[in-house]
Image (cartoon, rainbow, N blue to C red; front, top):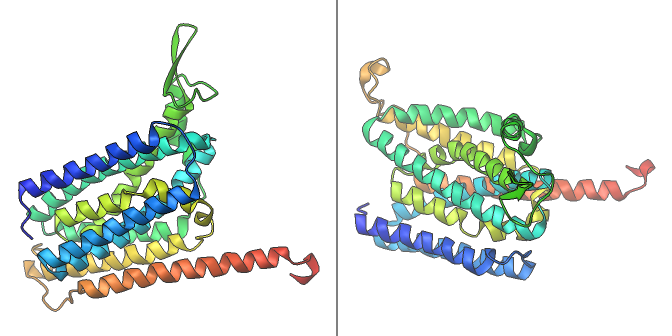
Length: 331
């Protein structure tokens, strides 16, 4: 895939332009988006992402198109999991609904910047060290295990990191509109709004650790990695307000993501074996017998896993609600 510097510049400029438009069109005036507004913009950004994928397939071939769609699906699923944690953070800090858009917007921009840094580092590592696939694969297997069994029980708003921040910064007890700092009795205080942003940024850093190795397990093209991440993050703010109530019903989302991360981890290890150069493994020779999982299979597997996790979650929560509505002696 031949991506010129000009294409990179245009892509990054258009991405920045979208976020600048989002800020001036929707964020500057605090308000809680309606379901209709959220649905229209979510549909617009998802359609744009799908259209871009078709463009990649037509221009560069459907191998790259398939890699983009597999990466986009994976990153979108991970981003929805990210939204779940955002919901916990904003609930923990009791962020007023009219200011939640601003928190989400800043959090998404931080996520894109962090992922951009990780993408550049990942691309450099892959280009110079083939053994990094072993590291990425092992990391994803560990993250898959944690994803499957940790859940979202802890509250990032009350974690060790945020308690440390509170000890170091003078914090007001109440919000002052959407301001980050306020002057009281001649002394500068930070508001809970700034603490929310710090917590969201910390969450973004943690999520970038599993997000970037995961997509590099599906494609080695940094351009596809970046665009799949950018499109997965675009419209995430609107999706938060659209499916806010649904998030709590996706009880098997973590397990579904764990399966996807484990699958990509195995795929990375198999690829590492196929291009092996480590002298203490197979005398430094590639293990050509190791199968390479084709991208079409990866795409189908990821889509099927997301579908099964979603359907199973909705069936489980529907059954729980039905049982809860029954008299005690009939449960």
